[in-house]
Length: 349
Image (cartoon, rainbow, N blue to C red; front, side, top):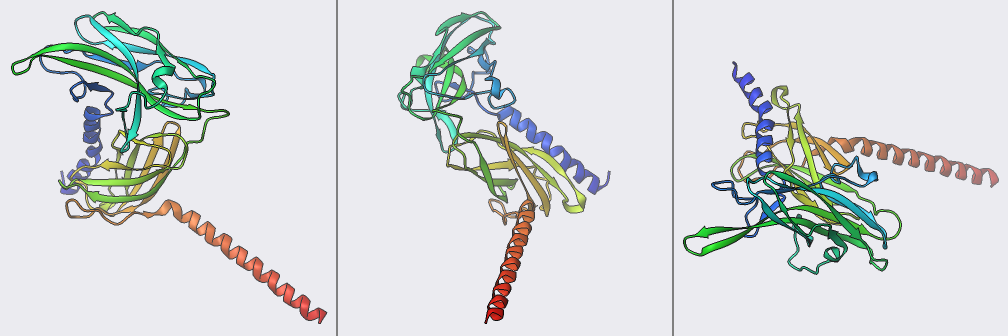
């Protein structure tokens, strides 16, 4: 196998290793009382539980985001309900407690709010079984009901439905320690009269760089120009590289939530063997049914911890050309009108 062929295989296989990394570190939905994520995977099971939304509203069945989270708009005085499932993956029965907490978007991360009264969702959202005993390796279907008061003010609220199980673990220094394992479903609920507020975003630029460890990375700046929060996901494709190489798709680092009017960075981490370029990059970002694309030419810097020049955004060139054509046409029309007016004045004189 020639060096060029080896390099091409490394570039083509890079997305596979990135996908493995994302699958291992993906979007965390479980949290532990001690600040860890998920249950203890070593030794005896610590009460592993899971939670999954089973349905979305009729007008959001084609929205992949609404199939994972409760994303809805309701008018004051309206009600709704959703089915969801809680699984017990341990070999013993578990007493599972359900709760609803307020959440917030902090530093572009969807996190529990430190203030339990941050919004009204704990008062509006009710679960039909506040607690139950789940048999080993079982799935229990529950229902959540949402009741919006007629006097509810306009605005989007954030929260989470939590399924929690407590377990005790012996500790040689602290005695018996109680650990709370929980998994949750996010809630993005907008309330207000009339239709749902618009959702939209723009990708402002695309910048290549290298991490402190030398891995190539592409960063996009995203602005939420709509009136609802967004959860960003997406992919990056590279083409027309050195020797005609192509690579991708590479997954966007997950877990970025952008509030209305906010700005965030969406990053794509790539393989170490990727040549510097130049490359033609095509980035596609999504939030539910909404998606935007940006295409441009990039070259990765050589130095670790450095950022290169922003991409030459080729997808905007047609708009620039069209705008220049419109301005030229307008200038021509103005010139013709001016000449005719001058001639009319000369004739009248």
